[in-house]
Amino acid sequence: MVDYRIDRRSGVATYVQIVQQTKQAIRLGLLAPGDKLPTAREVVEATAVNPNTVLKAYRELEREGLVEARRGLGTFVRRSLGAAPADSPLRAELEDWAARARESGLEREDVAALFTAVLETHCPEQAAHSAPAHTPQGDPS
Image 1 (cartoon, rainbow, N blue to C red):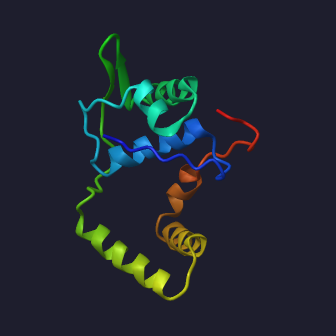
Image 2: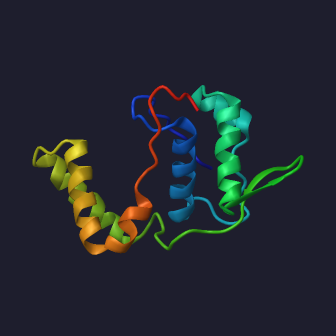
C-alpha cells in the first residue's frame, strides 16, 4: 500500500506528486504487478485532496501503462519499474551517506542538490528525462 504525502508548498502539482510517489513505490518494489492501489476515496481521506486530482493521477499512470483500472474492482499495478528493491544493500549505504551529510550540517536541499549533481555525472543520458514536472503554484490539480 502507498502512503501518499502531499507537499502543498513544493510547487509540484498534487496529481504529479501522486504519480511520482506511485512510481517510486513501484520502482522500490513496495508495489508489484497485481497489487491494488488505494481507492480514490482512501487517498482523499488520507490527504484531503480533491477526488478528481486522484483520478487524474491514476489516469496518467494508466496512460503510461503502469496501472490498469478494472471496473468495479479498482486500479491495479500492471508492470514493475527498475530493479531497486527497498531492502537493497545500496539503500543502506545511501542511508548512511545521507545521515553523514545531515550530521555535517547540510540541509535537505543541500543533500538533494549534491546527490542530483553526482547522479547527473554518472547517469547523464537519463538526466533530461527524469527531471520532475513542475506546474505553476496556482494550479491546484
